Length: 162
Image (cartoon, rainbow, N blue to C red):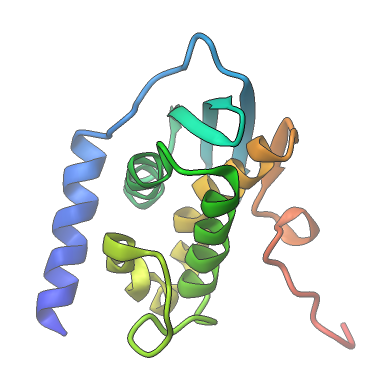
């Protein structure tokens, strides 16, 4: 357990200090803006999609270390993937981060992204980790913006009776 926490911290620090695919993509075909009002994370994602393939993806903005690391790793993982494969990874990442997918016992396509599995134990940080993934989903579906706030959150489940 201590080893997985150390790896998690190392990955977060590395990607926060040296984010991969940082900046705006000049020839983007798809863009979206993501906001996490709870934490203040605010990112802009730009993609160049050719046919069904994500040829390039970049992000920029102001965010906490967890959000920036998640976005950095996300961009490296989805670059070169088909839109369909990227959406599968989006859903699996959300499910892992929210505790709906146990990566130790269920098949998945997350690879090294499983370093974020422990975020499910930090409820206030889950939205930080999944904001880039919401934003990717929004960009792929021609939505100019997305949020992790209540009904705007694609993973939000209303509480019955409230």
